[in-house]
Length: 288
Image 1 (cartoon, rainbow, N blue to C red):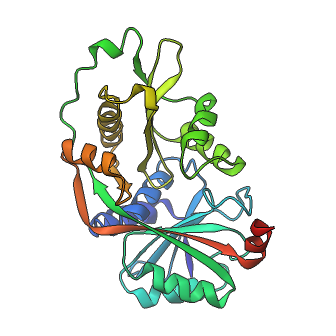
Image 2 (cartoon, helix red, strand yellow):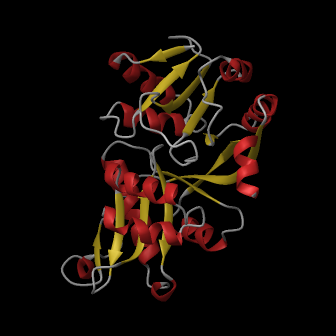
């Protein structure tokens, strides 16, 4: 195991990962954020350098942590050789197996290898698979002239909006998610439409892997073009900062898939896999 903390090597890694799109997108996004101030306190672990075969991004060990917070306790994975990834997983101190956490990646062997190692360490694992999406450069946006001067108004989210996002996110509704969303809003680009009272009615945020997520419009404000406007504006904002504009969508989310097709988003040949791993001691507590 090697922790890569040299700034010049991290910049070199960013360039190398770009040559392995789309499978490296999650790790690439995390490394870009590390190289631009590291607001989420991440670090990079590899099997070797410079000829690495597996790379994992993780939370810095000195960063404050909550053992129940799988949102923040998140790892991104890219490998050239799946055996190197398995060996890295099995090494001591690469993964904190004593907390609830998630692993993200865009390679098909990720689940089986992670499950084998996790099972040997008495962890339960839950897999969710998504269609992975990438946005081409956004050259133009819908007419926003009416959304810049008076309500409804196109702007960005604030930390004060985190509670609303926590209550409306299918993955949310808990203390850990509330804190996580507040951190995302503080650290990364967001876009929202606000009504005449200044309340968000449609929004999108960016996560720690530079992925667009939690795109949502309140039911009473749908069919007004807000979701399309927010999606394209956030994609363009990310692109203007040099980030790839990527996203994920569940197979049964027909409304979002229709929206993505309408804005000519590219559905990638690989899928996005999110694994949530829970030590059995925590699993038992959740059932009590």
